[in-house]
Amino acid sequence: MNQELISEGKCVFCEELLEKSKINTHLKKHLKDFLKQEPLGTSFLLQIFTYPNYKKSPYFIYLLVDGEAKMKDIDGFLKDIWLDCCGHMSEFEGRIAKSRKLVDILEKGMDVGYEYDFGSTTYLQIKVVEEFSYKSPQKIYLLSRNEPLKLMCHTCKEQPASVMCSVEQWEDQEHMFCDECATKHEEVCEDFADYAALPIVNSPRMGECGYEGGYIDKERDGIFVM
Ligand SMILES: [Zn+2]
Ligand SMILES: [Zn+2]
Ligand SMILES: [Zn+2]
Ligand SMILES: [Zn+2]
Image (cartoon, rainbow, N blue to C red; front, side, top):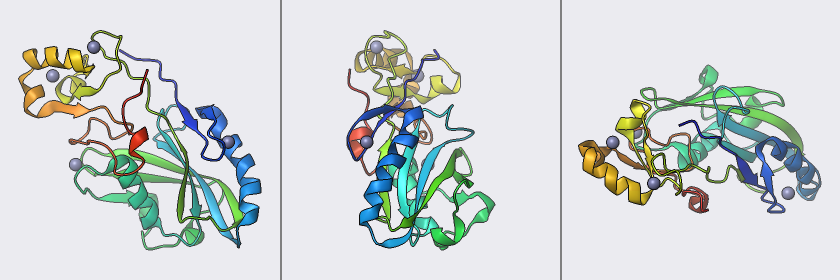
């Protein structure tokens, strides 16, 4: 059932589709020129992924954030794009207050852990990969995120999965289905029709606590298109 997941993301500046391992360097090159047109200030390039490391995480987000933004802006953005199912609590590692400005907290090379929902927790890592002495044009500027992962139906293995069953997921059984195979699963799994069917979305929160997808950047939050 372990599928080899290729994770790629588009660069916001040139629209090139890049392998996960190449994006960091690629974005830094653009930013060097791009930021020279902005007023002096402070901004940070953030790499966000699931715990424990970037290499193992098929999910990623790159953000350019302005130093005058607050930790709560990052918190809100992560909830909007990846996390919010029903308004759970969240926390930055070291209990960094969300009212603090980024410029007073972040520095290049720093790693900040982040938790959403203290029950069925989603653990993220935020890495400060670069610091710039220019302002960001937006408080939070989305530079890249992983494109929808090539998750295939566990039953027919031919169509993209569009829905999952959280019951089988718990037991690590076949749990991702295409529309057609989902209809068949419904006949053998009562819970599926009742409550256990959850959409395939582009987020590490997928399959948790009824999560049905983000509020922003929706076109890249769907299932992958063959
Ligand atoms: Zn580019
Ligand atoms: Zn929830
Ligand atoms: Zn199928
Ligand atoms: Zn089921």
